[in-house]
Length: 613
Ligand code: ADP
Image (cartoon, rainbow, N blue to C red):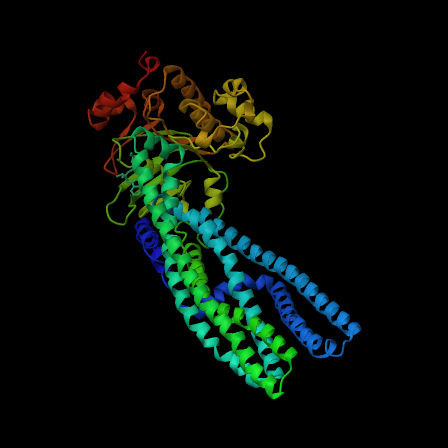
């Protein structure tokens, strides 16, 4: 899907708009689309074949009870043959039971197959999305990912049952039944079949209306999902509460909900009218058989048993006709679902390993920016001509006004984004020549708002190193000055931290995330210091935690505290995406440039009593 590709973030935004508001696009049934869909079924072809076999057997068995009824009425009853009657009744019962058993078995088989197909698709989708770049996640609506990962994929399960399996079942039933009807009496068979188009035409029409309503409903449900995602989360709900927006958000939600409800009602009403039409036609069929068959009976060319069997068989004909007329709609719907899934699977992974990428060993940690330019949108540059070298084991502090490009600069080193121009090199290698996994294994990141999963403290720590021993965990937490605090919690390392670690204070979260990086023991550290002023004890604890974190490693710290800039080997001052000054604290103060202004307005203000002392 070309419009998703192209690497730039802006493209994603445009592409997703089309699903948020409008009806589902009507997919074109192309050979390549069908081929691609079938590729998901291919691993299960044996089960599919078994299912088709079961369908044929069950369709044939279904003919048995009406035919046995004919013999009961025409032979056993007039002949007063109790033995034959008992035998025919028993055989009819046996056929019905066998039919039921086959149906249970094939139902299980179909569930198994369709569940495995969606299992595969869901895995493929997750695997693809987890490798998408940050550009994708910063633009895509969270509700959209959830909808595609859950209801769209589950929709495919229905597709399997309503199209492939049911089509096979219905075609088999239709064929076998029609053959049986013609074999019994071709004139009556023609009468029975004459009304088939009367079914097919309204079915198609109603199906199309329902499809349109269903796709509108889906768009509304997606809107609802988005409101839920955005407002019923820790950050979203905090924002909503603080700004007192509960009423407005509910209004928005209620609006979408109301529209979805109306649409659902509309859809089911369309179904009801359809039911009425069908009901009338379903009665016309048997009535005509009774009438014309009755005339033949009076003339003596047909038996009562045959008429009864004929009507019973005819009932087996109309169900498949209705389903088959709907198959086009179901197929369109399912193709649309597949298209939505393929849209995602086709998203270009703009940050991926080059074919000739090599594994980076353990880095020394020399980081070089060579005339780096970067733009998120392809228009304005966020970084422009940035060049510098950070020697192994040194600490580089990044300072500058908000929006200067500090975070962006750090994100280019582990390839969270790729440069637009110039190159980032580590130990002389362009980062794009290395495999992403080996590159990132050398990195540790402490974010400004550390992200903790809603799991135990231990599990959050193990995220950095799955096989870490308890001793290693404790050593990392001691180094990060958080061990004693964790020990004091009711469940110690087993304490669940809540969504995004809400049960911990900002300083504690920061120290847990520092411990997590210490446990990983990477060569290069990126740290975004918290801008929120912490109490002086927390400041001191974090400062002590940073020391073992940064010692001996190449580090880039987006600095907000005086102590950090004081201990940096070099300070890079960024403004509007350019490095405008660089040097040590003392050198930069002397130049009386932007750094001096920042120092006077920012660092002094953030300096705790300890730092000014
Ligand atoms: P800093 O860390 O110095 O505050 P950033 O690197 O976060 O600055 O941002 C630099 C510029 O890039 C800002 O103008 C910001 O609006 C823009 N920006 C940041 N992230 C994105 C993004 N994901 N998409 C588009 N623009 C972005």
